[in-house]
Amino acid sequence: MADDAIRCDACPVLCYIKPARTGACDRYGNHDGKLVRLDPHVVLDRAVERGDSVVPFLDRTTEWDGTLIRNNDSQSDMFVTAIGAGTTYPDYKPAPFIISSEVAGVDMVTVVTEGIFSYCGVKVKIDTDRHLGAECSTVRSQGEAIGHVTTSEYGSQMLSLGGVRHLTGGSRREGTATCDALLNLCNGKAVELKIDDGAKIVVQAGKPPVVDGLLEERMRVGCGSATIGMFAKQWFGKVDEVVVVDDHITGVLSEHQAGKLLGVPETGIKVKGRRSTPGRYFQVAEPGTSWGGTDIDDPLEILGKFNAKKAWSGMRLLMVSTTGEHHAYFELDENLKPKEKSLPADLRDSVARIRENCEPALCTVMFMGGAGGSLRAGVTENPVRLTHSVRDALTRVTCGGAPVYVWPGGGITFMADVSRMPQNAFGYVPTPALVAPIEFTLKLADYAALGGYMESVRPLSSISTGSDQAGPRRVSARKDNPWPLEARPEAKKT
Ligand code: SF4
Image (tube, rainbow, N blue to C red):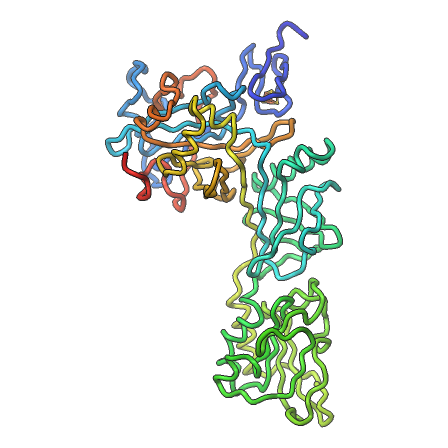
């Protein structure tokens, strides 16, 4: 090993880095013989968000005198995130930054670290009716299995991607492809995914999905039954029968409770599929990417023969999908066969209303990770106390300053919406694992009580001249995120 190479000890890879070169993850480099974290350390600033004039970060009249709290740092308006903060390894070392601040007269501390997550993944919500693949089908990126299709939700298809099994339990290629897809999704980039025996999709946080090359525009207004319930009044008197085609629950106006209450007469319609309750049918067709998430292109395929005792010649029938994207209007001829006609003007509005009630189709990417050994031991010498403190709402967990949902039960397993974080908040290490920012904020007294590294606590102002940083980058705090330093109402009194 060349003498001038230095060793990075920020993760288990322990790279030797030559001068002017970077380590395997590109996060650390050898700068004049010093190990430096290459990306700027991100500090959220509420003053920037408010449009106030910003006090220069380095504007300090005196050197830090070693006290834990300084009162002239606009502290309550600045929040030190873990983005660019670096990682400490092995686990027992204190987190890279343990920052004190005074908020509304209370001494607070924020422990920040870029956590290395081997146990992590993303849950992806894709607003589309279209069938992307059967539940449990494998999802692939770069040809490698990186996750699976999970239970669909109301108007959305869901994917569960990543997780320790794909990161560590398969081949190296599988782990690398998984890490790569997670990193790009979490950093807001578009990722192409292929589902076994299903669709090819392009997913990007906050953007509409692309399914088999088609940009999805609308998220359905509801299931077929709900659509009948919502629009029955608007159809009443203008048409004799309406069928809202839906892969899950197809609705039939004349049989549905909404139609019954309005006095819609029976029409003798026969819908194929399994009748659940009046006017609600399951399994009218196979799942697909056409009408209402089914595989049918001709809606009449889901209808049987009309009952001659109830139906009549000239009966008016509207068939429509749950997004209004597909619709067709028919009238029964003298043989009670539906004949397609152009949509009457007074029904056009109702179809347009369905479309109008659809929300824009988007992809949502939720990062999910478990704060394990290195994270908790970097906060306190007695890690379980941090878990208890989080559960007791004494410690607030944030991810790049964004709010997280901490799952009940054991451990600190949390989810965060990546679109609420600053850009490029995530990194990776080639173990492979994802690097994600995580911050723990609590009262200084509580931190001392849980066995925190009090000797490592320092004020915000001390980081601006730290030799280990190029200098923090101020980023405007998002208005829609709760301010991480604000007291939470649910926090127990201590
Ligand atoms: S992979 Fe990155 S963090 Fe890990 S040792 Fe190498 S340079 Fe350091």
